Image 1 (cartoon, rainbow, N blue to C red):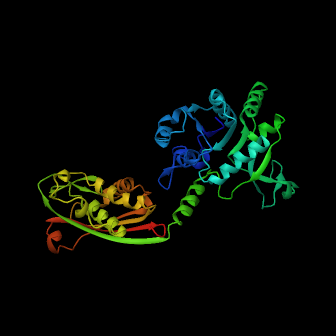
Image 2: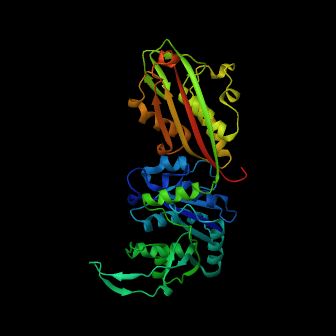
Image 3: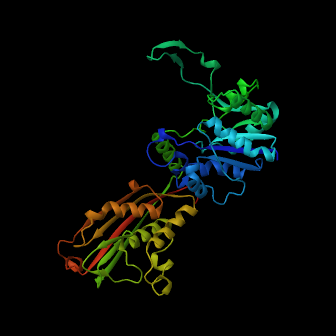
Length: 390
């Protein structure tokens, strides 16, 4: 084996805010760590990927890494990043790679060319890190925040990952640091320097940013979203009469009611209208074309399958759902008490943030079949964004 990669993913990422660790949070429908793993999976120059994870996150990692053939069994990391990398190096030792790349799981956007440059630089120098010139003025301050010194930024570089090393040298350096009870190095380059290894730099990438805070997630999601300039809209409408029963399905949520709804599937007017709206935005016909009521497979079917199917057309063309908006027309049941649950369920089905889903309700002021409480209807709109030419 010539080249292997270690993905450092054992941290808990407290600065990213409450919730699951940042490496398992979704960024445009994919976990952050999945994007990092896929970079190495797609590289013809990398033969194996050694993940290092927190032992409590094994299930999350299993889902995020499903289907990646280069991934070796994950090993548990330590209390510090340095200990975690050493665990990965020890796991790789039996494969004896010539070159090892160390990469942060929370850097999901390096380019394939950056990875190639890392390997090339390490083969040439034995140790190399991607670096960028510092453009801001940097000052050294004391514990009170008072300026002590202005540093010459011409000599400063901001360092990224993947960092690339001759495997044997880095493993020996890590073992030496462990034996010396040194556990305070900020990255592998600093440890290598301590061990007497000369570390070279090569050109990094401005977009290769480590996701650290909630603001980082918002910024990256926005940047990816804006790469889809083809904006399309669709509308949908559905109606069903009331019948015997004790509930109605609205947006995938079971809402108690004195009556049921008559329909071939579960008669969820909200999901049916949204399905037609998404299909309309994509130019893919209507719900009846894809799920004809004459087909017994759909008798009593849960309508979440219909909306998910419509959304799959968006994803297959590299698109994203920008907004889903639905209005329920009924005298009863009242939507207000269930609005948040309906929004959340629609968001889950469509794979979007709930902020991209809106649910409203109105009556018809006693007019028509809705005013007579004979049935329920919904109208919806969907906005999608696609890459040009897709």
